[in-house]
Image (tube, rainbow, N blue to C red; front, side):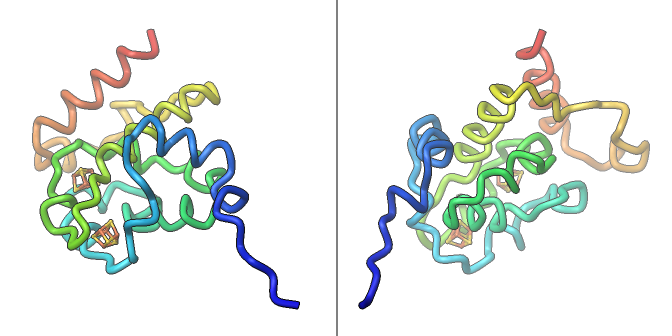
Length: 137
Ligand code: SF4
Ligand code: SF4
């Protein structure tokens, strides 16, 4: 007998919470990868932006909750600009950051950025990072 997939079960509570915080559905994304190709911060990320959304689609938030990607994301909106579905990944990243904070994880450590990266990174990366860091204190 054919089994039907229950989206609520696949999604799980944590992914639903990320969607709720973000105000964005994971399932509009069809994994074209344009966001990852356009993102200026991928050299510092340990997971591509499109992989973040894919793991969430698959109901595997535990993978994403260990990633540094949401903390490196500078909310520059480049990904949304190129996304054929208009998915706002910066909001999803914010949702994941909130979940990481609820798990007691501090993912931002400015000293971990090497000098070369600090020279070429847009200032918004650091301003954004400091804002997130301050939200922990
Ligand atoms: S560009 Fe949009 S549709 Fe394509 S992988 Fe990224 S979020 Fe998904
Ligand atoms: S908003 Fe974040 S994920 Fe999207 S392009 Fe900018 S840094 Fe990359």
